[in-house]
Length: 509
Image (cartoon, rainbow, N blue to C red):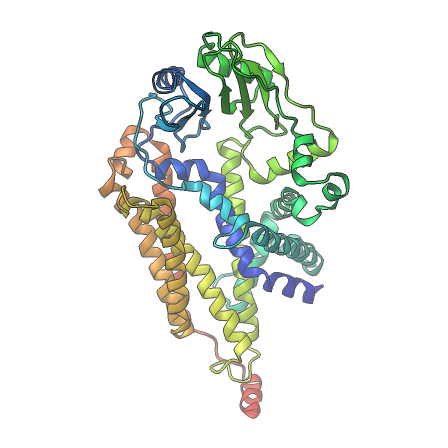
């Protein structure tokens, strides 16, 4: 079991670290998106904004065949987005507009993927086909589940380890850090790993679909039945006010807030409203309701899910944590940090334990050096890349082409640069320089934000803008943590080998 725990944790360990880092940030993806779009106000969509959205659509797309309205969550981070598609043969082009969710005023929002990219990366990765990425993530998650379960068997003193954390003891300290972060949030680690596998269920086990349906699309059509279709009658009729349509959709969705609304044939007597819910309630509705746009009558209620789908839905909700309030979300976040430290300390512990057993610790073999360099490049490089992702959001020109893509590219450019730099440096210097760079980059984020927007830390404190205050404080905390770790690396002095081990090493040489 000890061998199984070691190798199941080490081989996918670097991918698991990236999954944990990016997945942990995803618990605050809306807040991150809010910080990365400082042009938007904070708050839920107001009735005034909905009224203004209807006015915009009526003025710009009265003869359109379809309207769509994307309603952001109350936590902010996304604009109230509207779009329209013209009928065939009608003059004019399709279009879209971004509105402030509080005021309803049209705003020019910077092009950014916000927290959404950080969330998607933890299971879709980047620069590679999605199915390959999800297969890799599934294999890593399976190995994580094996590592957690074998770790429970291996650690006989699991409850004693919960209270034991010794500093300055070398290998013993790394083992204590690994044990404490593993045991402290053990229920979370088990839950987040297993429910992550359930989330990607059809990647792992597609055979139930392929055995019963000719295509994947046929399965989804059966699971989520399409709604009624109607051609425009050519008879003018006024839509119900948009706030009332949203209210009726919410009632039909058994209390779930609508997140996406599509209106076919707006302004016609055959107008049909399709409303999909936000997935922000535990075991909430997962299918659409269809309404008559003129009368508000329910044309098709959301489909009723069976026991298997409800079970899967609950597990997906537990994994994503979108249903959680502020306190529970912070517990998710802190538990995710614990998981990140657990994986990182396990990777470092592998090298710490084996260095003492090397015939000559100053001249390790290739496999040892490979693990050591991967540790530095992945752990420090990914952290530096995320900091640069935030800095790029503030420093890239607003009118640059493919701006959102370049924010993402900047993350991986810096990650790769750190990786290459640390390969060329002695191990201790590589850790010290990479961690120092991380500390400097995270400390720069609040400073650059204050210089480039009117929503710096002090103005945000005065205005009670807690999303921006919290973001900047977390960045400063990350800078302090990286600086403290760099200081510990700089002041660390390895203990001399005992005389017997030293003589054995010299004899081996």
